[in-house]
Amino acid sequence: MIWTIVITVLATILVAVLAMNFATPEKKLERKIEHRYGVSDPQFRREMGVLLGPAILPGNRITDLENGDEIFPAMLQAIGSAQKTVTFETYIYWSGDIGKKFAAAFIDRARNGVKVNLTIDWAGSVSMDADLLKAMTDAGVRVERYRPLHWYTLGRINNRTHRKLLVVDGRIAFTGGVGIGDPWQGHAQDPDHWRDMHFRIEGPVVGQVQSAFNDNWIKTTGQLLNGADYFPPLAPAGTMDAHMFISSPVGGSESMHLMYLMVIAAAEHSIDLSAAYFIPDDLITKALVAARHRGVKIRILMPGENTDSDAARVASKAGWGPLLLAGVEMYEYEPTMFHNKMLIVDHQMVSVGSTNFDLRSFQLNDEASLNVYDAGFANRMTEVFEQDLKPTKQYTYQQWKHRPWKEKFAERFLIPLKSQL
Image (tube, rainbow, N blue to C red; front, side):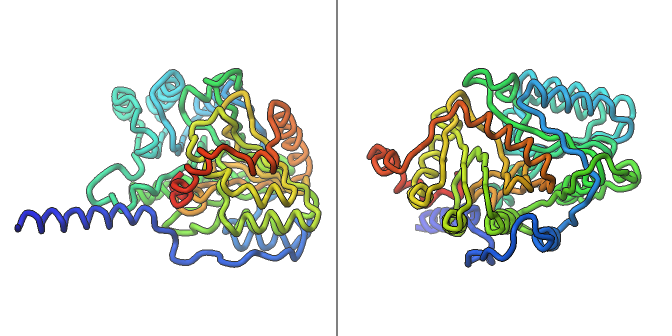
């Protein structure tokens, strides 16, 4: 009898602890944001800077990098040029060829006296080669695993860092969607090599990227990385206005959700969205439908059958009906897994970074996004978006209405879990 009671109590505690992983923030947005001004209105920038946190800074240069063939050499070259500091945060760090190359670069710099600090998500690096990790730490690389599994962390095991940040000497930064794994190598030439983008950043906004890295470094180590080696004076490097902001379940969890809602509400002409995972909530859906009703052209580009998450794809399609009826154009990328994360609005503003267009990114993950306010950059990203549209199939309302019964059946089980996908 006593053992039955003990087992029941322990099971109840375990269920309660695991249920904490499904919890959403206590306070959340509940009403659609109304259209009050456009993206080009100075009021839009004022409120984006105030409500999202960091101020919008002038004088930046943002360079897009397409797929692993451009991304990894640029990142490795920057690491190799480091003279004082390297800070790096990622969700995915898998065993494989590219993981070894990055480890070798970190080791080389550490052996040459550079302070190398890495934050690697525990869940995203479970398959990381232990020998590789040991080689880095033996060389003086400081590697911190974000929220490793312990009995006392079960209540937040579902809250991961999904940020992708690299800062070299406090002067050059990178962010985007790429993890350290072999599927990101190449040029999206086949289903084994993913389509993705990353961005090289120069100028004053690099300081905000470094600050974003410090956020989880402090949570993990209790240590602040500061001083001129990490935050040097930054002269203008270009003409783009930008700011980097972060979100986390323990602080600012609504930042990403708020950003998307504000941007959609401000759109007057066009919204182009590249989304590796597209699972919007009711507020986002209503905002997109309202934008269509005021004449905004909306194009959404997502993975097709080549996806790393069939469950996310099925859960996504369940909510497409109202969007398709409103005239939102939805496209599925065919050649390989489409992992881009980019929002372009009115050819004036672009948002890039680690954030997916889903509830996990809005509520559970630690994320970082870079907003760029520059017509030239927006036009360049529109060109990239339209190139990605070429190998796609448009998905229609009739297809959605007559989707297979197996999908509709699966939706019943997946929709309650959509924040976890």
